[in-house]
Length: 118
Figure 1 (tube, rainbow, N blue to C red):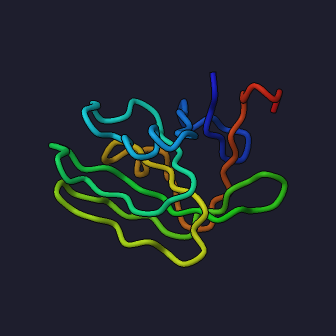
Figure 2 (figure 1 turned 90 degrees about the vertical axis):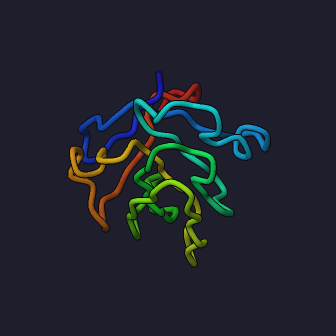
């Protein structure tokens, strides 16, 4: 299992969309994520066709494989998030997840439990 971690605390399970079809599919025809969805690279994110809102964190590549949160937004249904300069990846979660996790701009996140042993 793969985890989204901040300061050693597990925030959620995370699914990484690594292939082009996975990134294009995103949340299409899926329920709101139970954990988080990691999208890399983040060209455009939209909620067109989704009946729910999502929380989105724009992140840059931080040090030591960590990701620094540069901006967070709530993206309601039928909206498009414009690309952010410097954002290298997106963390997408169910509406309200970031508030529960107390996720803030400046937080450093990391992914643990990948197949490479991290």
